[in-house]
Image 1: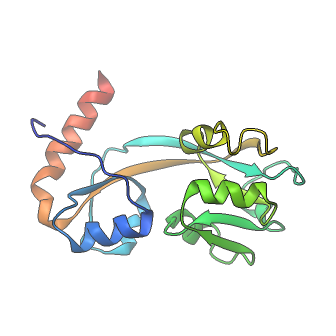
Image 2: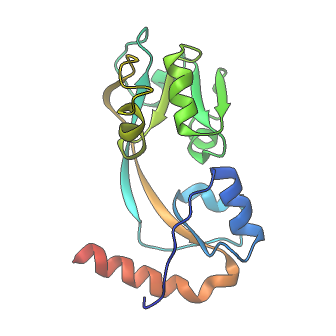
Length: 175
């Protein structure tokens, strides 16, 4: 695109707020398509940023075969606040626990305060390999729960970048 891009980590809810209400955040790199429900003025690029596998991670006392979202019904689920996927796929789930970070969620699982967490290996593996959680017995259940397409969203103030970003992403993926 010929512009400098800085990646900034923010908790999901704060990132959403900043994207919608601030001039400091131009775009959110990777969110599910339904993220646009947060604010209809958000602009989603057409090209998916990435296709991500999501797995169920369980504490040592839980073991079952994952057979879609309905198979999670009997279990308590910990999740990171602002995770739109929970609103979409577990809307009526009775046993949900909101936490601020993914690392806290895994510690919650390790302490057996919840049964499962839905996450991606991109985030989960570094946390589970940390000294704090390496030997806590958290395991990934099979098969994959879901594959999710994640998209980049721009705020309306930066609509001028949408087409250029989309074309650059397609070019990078092709290369």
